[in-house]
Structures are given as structure tokens and as C-alpha cells.
Image 1 (spheres, helix red, strand yellow):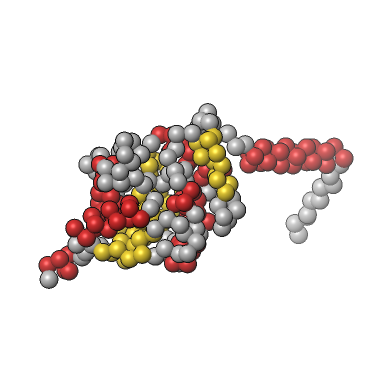
Image 2 (cartoon, rainbow, N blue to C red):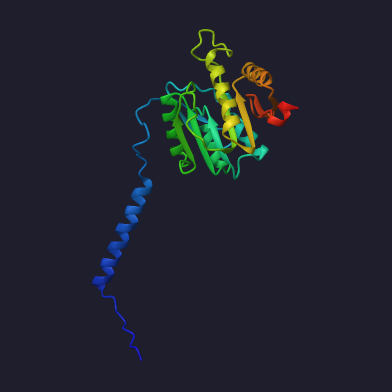
Length: 249
């Protein structure tokens, strides 16, 4: 019969075990609390902080980031009521400071890939996503709207796009070239990066931008449907693409 060896822990053994456990706990806590990351820019001045009325969460807006708080005001409620985010992958175009991307992550998105053109805006979005502990869901990248090919070939269940007027235009005209380029990117991604049963939502800075988007869509045979909630101050449109069968009939 095999003998069972029993070991009695002496005070010295207990002290060594206690020290080992303490070191492990401190290491874990230190790693978890370390907010510094090499991919986050900490040297941009914060112009102001914006509090989301629905979630009561604050976001930092870096100096140089073009962003109208009206765009995000109530947009989370619009997405939640439409039940379009939970369990789905999201492509977030012209993401701004990352507010919409964080909202999607909180609404249960499985993956959010956000793109913006400006370096400072991308840095701001990465900062806010990390600050709200959503970087395990959200990835933010910079891209060139003028590039012939979009920087991802992945397909998504939902495409969200934010359209603002051309801030570089002397008269801030929403029909300026920059807005046209952004609309072209939205339509290109809708055709190439959307799952067959996917949906496209566009939030516009104002009614004039929405009218420009509507006109462009109609000229290409597409349709749009307003889905703006009462709490959403900026117009939200759902894009319905013209299918190949519809265009041939």
C-alpha cells in the first residue's frame, strides 16, 4: 500500500508563501493600473471635455479636432432603439474623437473599426477609447479619403458615418469638395465592405449636409430613410443601396 507523505508548513514556509502571493498581487495590480501606453498621444492639449447626456460619460476633445457635440447628442439612443449594434461588427467612418465608437462598444458591438483622416483626431479617438476601456473592441486608424482603395477589405454588419461640412472652405459650404469626398467614401464602403444583410447609417451635422447626402444618393439610384429620434439633434439617415437586380429591371 502506497504511503501518503504529509508536509507540515513551518513559519518560514508560510512567510515565503505570503511574500510570493503579495508580489504576484502587486504585479497584477500594477499592470492593470498602468495607464501609459506607447500608442497613445499624451501631449495634445485638451480643448474641452464633453459629457454624453445619455451615459453621463465624459470625453476629451483635443485642440484641433473638428467636432460638433450635436452630432453625438442622443445618437446612442438612436442606435439602441434601432437594435442594430449588439452582436454586430461596425465600420465607423470619420469617427471624430471616438465618441460614437465607444457608444457602439457599450451597445454590444463585437468589433468596431474606426477611421478618420486627421492625425490629431485619430490620436483623440485612441485616447478616449482607451480612457473608457473599450480598446479591446475598438480599433482606430488613420486613412486618406482620396486614396483609390479603402484600407480594409473586411466586411461589416453595420456601417456608421459622420458627415460634417468642409471646415477648410472659406464659406463653410457643405457642397465643397471635402464633403463630396466623404460621401464618396461612404458609398464606396457601402458597396464593398457591407455584409449582404448589413445596414448603413449616416449622421449629418445639419439639414443642409443631409440634403447634400440625399441628393448624391438619389443621383446614384439609392434611397435614404430618416431615423432620427427626438433626442437626436443632428439628422440621422439610413441608406438603402440600389441592388443589381433593381437597377437591371
